[in-house]
Image 1 (cartoon, rainbow, N blue to C red):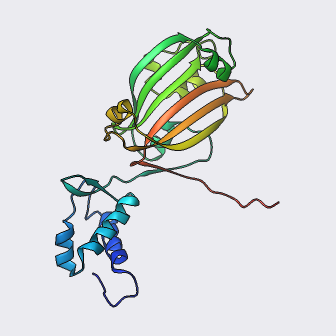
Image 2: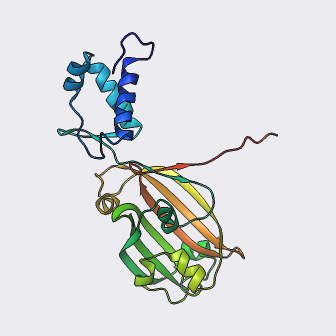
Image 3: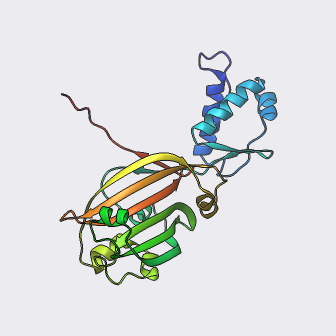
Length: 243
């Protein structure tokens, strides 16, 4: 309950009450919450206080709003540590989820000058252009576009690319993935990303650019992945570096 004599702000107490109900399962993902007026009347607090609590919980990813419909409980975000080179398939299996892919585009194309430079191959050499949706328990999580040299990764098909590419590269192609460089930035979903990720147009996304390499430092993959910001968060352990 709300303790008005407590030094803790009332909006904070309400936030903690709602978070507790979410954590114990009393409130489930996509459940609609009572209105601001109902919370205000039940706890005998101002609607402004309720609105502040709702806004903070939306900003923290516990709730989401739908214009004209109300405030709802958000799906729990997946948290992934930015340590080690792992695939989407491996990460989802760690969480007990079933990973899968929906192939949107698979084509063998001549490498552009820019792509050839990134993959360290000759211009016009064949590369796979692959666009797919990555899913967890059949729910879309990421929109991915990637390129690989066809002379390096032989025999790749759309069917194979619908599963784990890293598994195929290491177990079938006899190549060893070693390291990658990766950048992450916030962005806004394009119309295509919004459509395939089942999110509203203009929704925030986490945009990843990854260049992966083999043990001999040969580039193996150039990929761009757009992750749903409402379902994903990333963490990293940082050590203090002294001069």
